[in-house]
Image 1: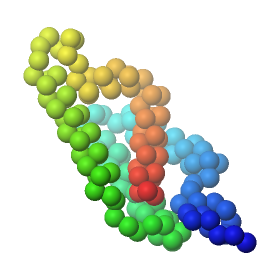
Image 2 (image 1 turned 60 degrees about the vertical axis):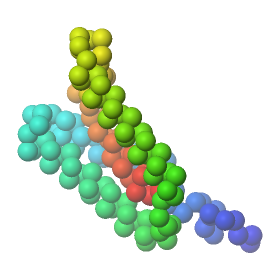
Image 3 (image 1 turned 90 degrees about the vertical axis):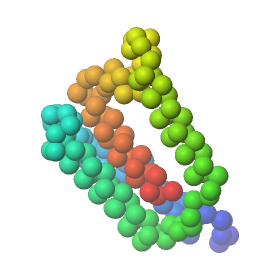
Image 4 (image 1 turned 180 degrees about the vertical axis):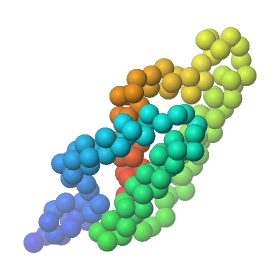
Length: 140
């Protein structure tokens, strides 16, 4: 059997999550997401309902990645620099929009996301997506 770099003997990439597993996980997490996004905004319960599952998802993904023999190298400095630039641009846009008036002509990132996530279902879907992104970033 010919070995391919980046693949195990079964032919799949290490750390790759099967689409079926991801879909089942999203379905199982959805009721919790529905409950979590219904908590009063900025309350301690809402904060815990968001932060604790994020930490749990990152922890589970990290342990699973380690057990699967995933890469342990450090991120490339250029990759980290791109994320830092993106974060700095987002922060600068948020600050510039916040300081300018009238607000409807200069929306902040938070006001744009509030409009997009106006419904309970959209907020729950965003919560599930946020957990999925967390797991994906830990696997990388």
